[in-house]
Amino acid sequence: MSEENRILVGIPVYNEAKYINSVLSEVCKYAKDVLIVDDGSTDLTPALLAGHPVEVIRHSENRGYGRSLQDMFRWAAVDQFDWLITMDCDEQHEPAAIPSFIQAINDDDADLISGSRYLSLHPENDLPPQDRRAINAMMTEELNRVLNISITDAFCGFKAYRVSTLKAFSFDVDGYEFPMQFWVQAAANCLNIKEVPVRLIYNDPTRTFGGPLNDPEQRLQHYKDVLAREMKRHPSPCFA
Image 1: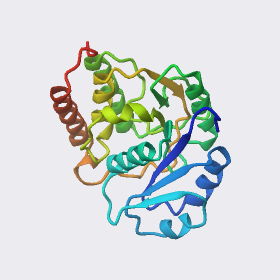
Image 2: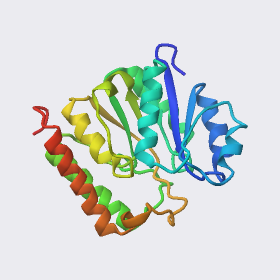
Image 3: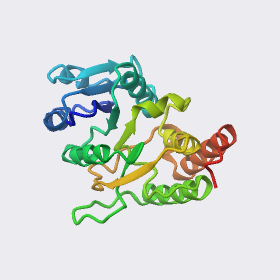
Image 4: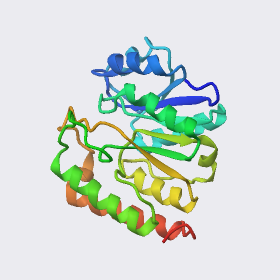
């Protein structure tokens, strides 16, 4: 890791016993400080985590992807890390890409470094479920239009955050719609945004969002509703 920046790698997990050992073994090759937020796993995930040199926050029940990220933000700030890199634990994010984020961090020209699965085409990319790709494309286009930003992938969880900027944010979205709230506030706070390419990997297309968000139309409408609410709450001269 960089000697100039203290960097924490944060990983939300929920029933990831299938992947925990392989993913964390690789992550720990690139990171000495790793935080896991176990979002109420009911499988062997908690027991397997004990076998790795990582810090763990455990939710007594499933509270949502957005809540797990909020816990990471608070931990990183309290423990005075300079940067937080977040990634998933289902082998859809390659630990070998962590050095690319560290290089972008060391360039010191951005506050947010966001992974993009669509910034460049990788010959080994997978094809995502059609509704997910379509919704991602629609919401990414809408965010660019209303926030005056230029991104290619609104929903990639592989990111690096400059921790000092996060104190200006106010989050209350706990689920998978969290990116809508985040991007609005990132634009409202005039963060400098950089994208780095990451591989597009879908090794389990049967994974669901849970509840009504499993329906693509309801999911899209919910994302739009959260975006509209956040736009009203966070007007900013940085917007178009």
